[in-house]
Image 1: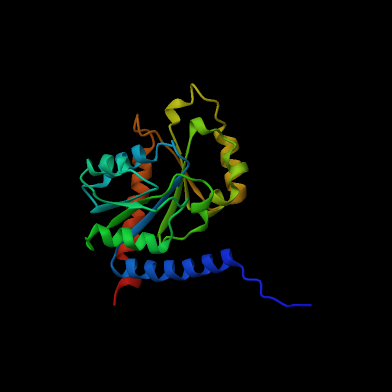
Image 2: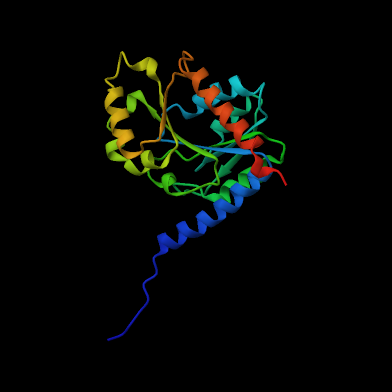
Amino acid sequence: MDTFRVIEIQKRVYENNNLNAEIFRNELKQNRTFLLNVMSSPGSGKTSFLVETIQRLKSQLKIGVIEADIDSDVDATTIAKTGAKVTQLHNGGMCHIDAGMSRIGWEGLDDKDLDLVIVENIGNLICPAGYDLGEALSIMILSVPEGDDKPLKYPKMFSHVDVLIISKIDATSIFHFDFKAVEERVKSLNPEIKIFLTSARTGEGMDEWCSFLSEEVMKWNESEEVKQ
């Protein structure tokens, strides 16, 4: 009987990406740059959430944004109005970006003096969860109109991220959303996850989120490990 090799492509791809991500993360740490990976499904209010985050933090932190999209520069144009430095990544139709693309986006900002770089990832709850971008913190946004059953349908994403942002909480009078059920489902997958309830429209919960993020950035950029 003929023998043949079986090559696990996905495993190899993940291993290579994880190595590249760790190298990139160390470089960012030496540079005192905090990379935030923001993931969600399309229509969750990701861009509006980031606009409000930047507006609250831009007086404290020097911020850059990497916009990842299959096509268009709509979100980049919106973010640029905040005064943050922006670069647009078009990934050629892929459902995710990886650490190499993340590095290209950072280099495209052409400014190594940034305290916080935010990656607005491809709108997708499946592919991005498997790819480390070299981030210091990963978050996902779940909007109230999407429903409270998403942790049951996309457990990998909820297991992967450090923070869950529940957005559009001002819409709870219109859409049924069981906050307690979501918390229980998410904590069963990811006991250490932090959860923030927010509305970019009314500003509710945004100060708490921004305070947390600012503290995380400061801790990362001032930690002893970056000192040579």
